Structure formats: C-alpha cells, structure tokens
Image (tube, rainbow, N blue to C red; front, side, top):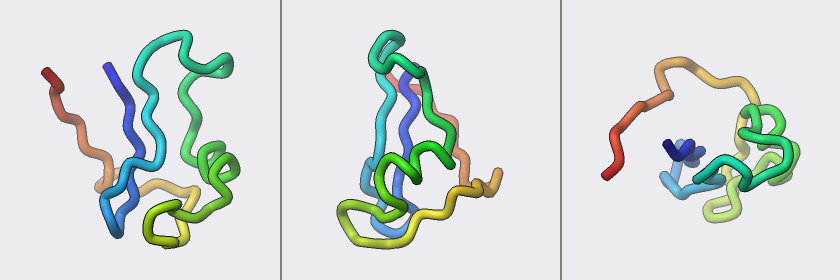
Length: 63
C-alpha cells in the first residue's frame, strides 16, 4: 500500500513511498521528510511543518 505525503496548501504530492525496497531506510517520518526536502513544498513554496496533526491524516483505498 503506497504512503503519500501531500502539501496542505496545494495538495501536491511531496513524497510517495510506493513499494518495499524503494528506499534503503524505509518510509520516512514527517520530520525526516522535512529535512530531505528542505522544509518547503517544491510546488507552492509553503513551509512544511514537521509535526503532524492526526486530523490531517487520510486513509484511502487505491485500486
């Protein structure tokens, strides 16, 4: 099951973990992802916060 991180402002996909073995370290935590991308959405430039609000997490089924 893919894990997708999206920007809260523009809904752009900031990072997608599609399959096991894609990355040596596995799925990054939100704080690790902020460090990887420099803390800014590459699409709209919004600052990305390392702390997640549980209300902003959405679980959906993919086909």
